[in-house]
Each structure stands twice: as C-alpha cells, then as structure tokens.
Length: 80
Image 1: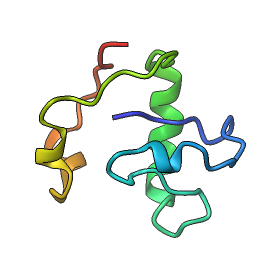
Image 2 (image 1 turned 180 degrees about the vertical axis):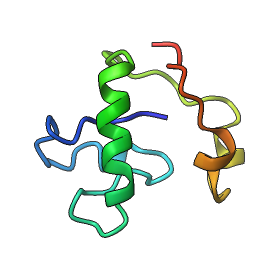
Image 3 (image 1 turned 90 degrees about the vertical axis):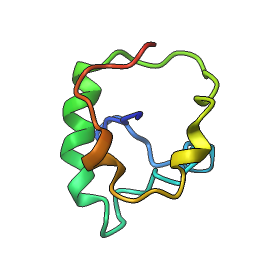
Image 4 (image 1 turned 30 degrees about the horizontal axis):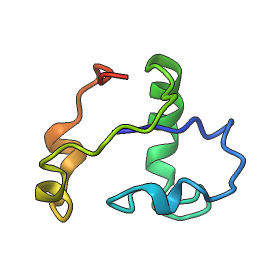
C-alpha cells in the first residue's frame, strides 16, 4: 500500500493511472474522505518512495478482492 500526503499532493492526477488497482482517487471524490486522514498520518510515518518497484508477483490475485484494507493493512512500513 502506498499513501500520499493530501497537503503535499498538487492534484495533477499523474499517479491515478499508475495505480494497478485504481485505488487512487481525487480528494474531491465522496469516497476519499475516509482515506484522507489515513494518508496524512502514514505519509508522515512511512519512508518516501524514491523509485518505482515491480508489483508483487501475486498482485493480480488480489486485484478484484473487496475489503483488502480490513483484511491486510499493516501499520509497519514495507520495504522501500
């Protein structure tokens, strides 16, 4: 999972098509409200990503699965 600090985002939209599961939505979207605070919080705790890494080999297995946050979220940062 990747988080974006909502106060640092310039709303250019470049990241949206890069997300393989279309999980990035603009902050004006009605569904965004619940994610804004989570993004703000974890973008201050987790390290910045400075280079693109390949998607996990099993990423497609989870692409259409619902409730991934509730099932898999871990507060620990991933490998940068």
